[in-house]
Amino acid sequence: ERTILLFFHGLGDTAAGWGDLVPHFAQACPAIDKIIVPTAPTVAVTVNGGAQCTAWFDIVISSFSPMELLAAVNKRPPYIDNSMVDVLYVLNKELEAACAASATRLNVIVGGFSQGAHMAFMVGAQLEAIAAKSLAGGGPVVACTGIVMLSGVIFGLDDLRRGIAAATPAAVPILQCHGTADPVIPLLGAQMTSAALRKMGWAGYEFKEFAGMAHSSCPEEIQLVVDFLKRASAPASAPAPAPPAGDRSEAYLRIPHNDKSYPPGQEV
Image (cartoon, rainbow, N blue to C red; front, side, top):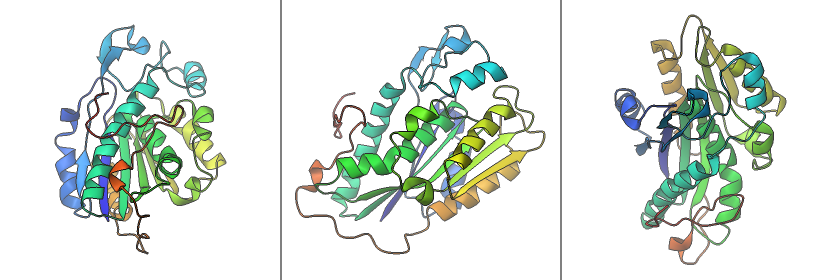
């Protein structure tokens, strides 16, 4: 059994921006074998006046006002498929390592801050459906064991619902945190996301508001995240079944909408 944490930074940030917290997560959660913090590509972002910055997708609004937020959370973000390809490339490298180590299970915890919170949900919520479609011929069990969403919202949830397996809301726990004084993404946006997830019947879902916290973090939130990561990285209660016989090196995750495979080592 192998467990990884994939964490996505926010708009305009890089992996280096999490250089202090990631070692803390690693030390506090020894059951996590590897933490991966990728850096988003640099693209033009509408909400930034078209200026180029690191972003997982374009945010096509002029501000985070309540009306624009309401419109944005119902639309699939531009460029999101490009980022999904990059994520599957990373996950397939980890899947290859799991196969090489004869692991029967690859547990994936996903987390993100701000724009990265959407990425965390998009990847984690769809992972079961992607794995079920991609790995029928062999390879270890691939499962999302937890989703952490910090100071962010979900965009295009109606579109995402189509890629979520029916059993996922009951199986994958979610921790969502937001500050009441966030000037970048208003608390209302997080509350809209929270209401939508509850309506979906997400069983292991927790939403925590932090009084006075801005678009940042606080010690209480970090401790809550650590506690969640410990639970999400705990060994499975039952061992995964042995994977089917066959060439396990050919077990690759595929992007949902076009069934393309992105094996390790391939340029994307």
